[in-house]
Image (cartoon, rainbow, N blue to C red):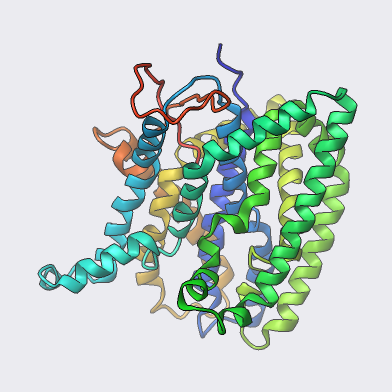
Length: 408
């Protein structure tokens, strides 16, 4: 029997997609040499509204994986479907971005270094600067059977206790995990760059590209698992903490904005508020709970249905939109960079955001309805798995239902 659909997850994915697009539009305009200080400050503050975007995708990927777990399937079939629905579109867009950065020059097609560079992009994408996320999230998919087995053991342990005690233990586990994660981010932001200089090349590369490593986002994955297994409790937490999260978010928003302005100097440096920073981590968790609570509140208001339907539609096509949006932004930037925008950079950013988000979703919708489009923008179906009885079989006679695209 299938589980009920969690409406707010798709809506939250839509918000996360919009946040990522806005973030990249801000990055396009804030570093331009002719930007005026008021626009620069406004964009820096607006940037902190987008911090929840990428971590929310990790949260939702985990939530869907753990929640939709009621059909056994072999690992080869599982990873094959994930490869088709997530990694194949990534490979397609990697080629597209690589060719675009080479200015569509056919003269290089016979050069072996052209293909060598393309292969390197498939491991560490640079031309498609946003594609790093697919490399990172796919590591969670590869290792998910191990995570599912571990979560099954934790659940078996928790069943010994009453519901109240169970919730207390889960809270304790998550608080410990949050402390460990905050310490990891402390090392990442302040120490790891210095560590890498004295290490062998392999470990140096691993630290230099730590943003590509799933370990750096493990807490959001754990949050998603908790949300999947304790959906009602999570909803209650989001509702109860909503007023407090408003104040926490406002406080951190002002504090981090002030810190960025102080530490940036003459030119705003958005990397000061990187994902891998303890204060940003607290801001993201606060934003995540705040938005979750607001979405639950909107479910009670019939007047919000058009808005929620829009978010639902955006969430459905967000993965393809995510893959395409950097290309659309590059196309628009080709025409806007020569312009002298003066004190209109903030306005230009907002207009660009609306255009990029809309056009990218349109591309995703169009490709999704074309034959073979799932190879480019992923599948919109849903696959339910049961990893509690998971076995590494190489052949499976059971038919699996359609796979879902957990990324957005």
